[in-house]
Length: 223
Image 1: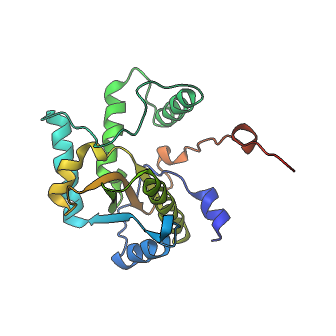
Image 2: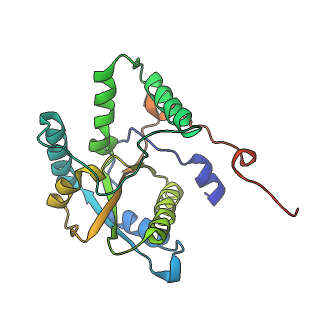
């Protein structure tokens, strides 16, 4: 598919088929995604790919930690603000209500919502989980570069017939992740990602999120 189709069909899938994804396919996706631009061509991204028994063990320990509330888990960096302003507050609320509505979960069903959130740590059933990391000595510009790389990964995955789901839910569990993957303490785990073949009939995958048009976020001068 061309790049426009890849952009238009990319979505954060929340239910995957157990169909395996070959290691060679994952390598090809990452090699192509690495064409992303970066300041002075630093290429600051690091990627750790988990499948099979490694992925299963990571999922098992994380879910056990959540269920037993063994300790307070906290990310090494701040992803979201403490207080939400508009229009971000409304957008965030809407996507949550839309997703839970498709799953038949009323807002009073806190347990059902919690179980759906825990699906993050099963990679929503995807056979591959990726973790993106960055050297702690680097600054915000390199984080921007990594964001462009992560975007490329998702678009190349679509070109290969796969779907993905970027996950901000993983960084708080960085200590558990490091038990299963050789990510040094000198690197910050930025996010996770589920990668695999989408379950087309799963209700949660019928979600189509809205996007504000350019007229709402862009201003043009000199035309």
